[in-house]
Amino acid sequence: MPSTPPEDNLRPDPTWEIPAHIAIIMDGNGRWARERRLPRLAGHRAGTENLRRVIRACVEFGVHYLTVYAFSTENWARPKEEVDGLMEIMEEFIDKELDELDAEGVQIRHVGKLEGVRPQLQIKIREAIERTRHNQRLVLNVAFNYGGRDEIVQAVRRIVEDGIPAEAITEETIASRLYTAGLPDPDLVIRTSGEVRISNFLLWQSAYAEWYFTPVFWPDFGRQHLLEAIADYNRRERRFGRVLDPDE
Ligand code: IPE
Ligand code: IPE
Ligand code: MG
Image (tube, rainbow, N blue to C red; front, side):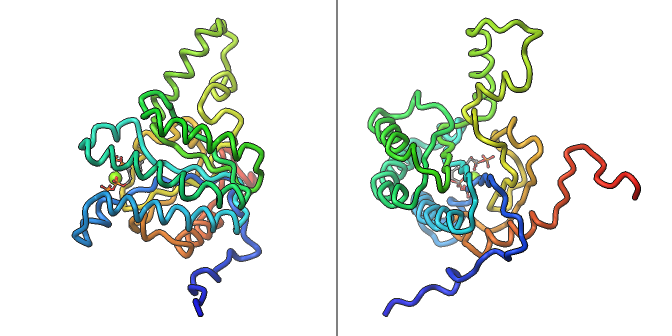
């Protein structure tokens, strides 16, 4: 009889605040593979398997928004074989997971540009968005062909096209033209694999996010690690520039 892995029983402490929006830079697939003398694409496959685990944990823990960095505008500069492999893995992920994600109440959204993505993958991404648009349990934003600077450039172009006068431009004017328009900013941004940099991810939106860095490679980042990140988040004091207790 198959037994439940002990990890599946781990739950957040009931006193914790669960971040409404968690964003993850899923890094370290290549190094995970190298440690095992496997090709880099095997690391990307393992990373994609892991994404399914983490989505499930987020659904169970009551996270409302999960944004994952899957492919950056700079990742096109990798060897063609790796880029082609990543596109294939993305297609397979949609083919394999869409039914279950839909059944679990996951709403799939895309942040980034579809332009430049091969047509068959564009069609699958559009289908996944269309099919899950009414789901409410978890919004899964897939940052794919995403770059924070590109996003700001696109927003500025739209502001100019919309003929908005300079003095009328507010933060809302910009935020409402980003790929993430209508979504709350991330509360917690996690980066795996030990790198401590932003790599063009959610430049505007992460202005007041809490950051969490872990040396664990993405394919190994499980439920236990996610709980550690949420526990750490609960030890932070978010001040947003204010003084919380002026008499202290
Ligand atoms: C993250 O893993 C996945 C993508 C960027 C697509 P990497 O492929 O960057 O893994 P490392 O950083 O080389 O270990
Ligand atoms: C960021 O990781 C992009 C994704 C995880 C999709 P990279 O591995 O591309 O970032 P750098 O090159 O180390 O900054
Ligand atoms: Mg990397």
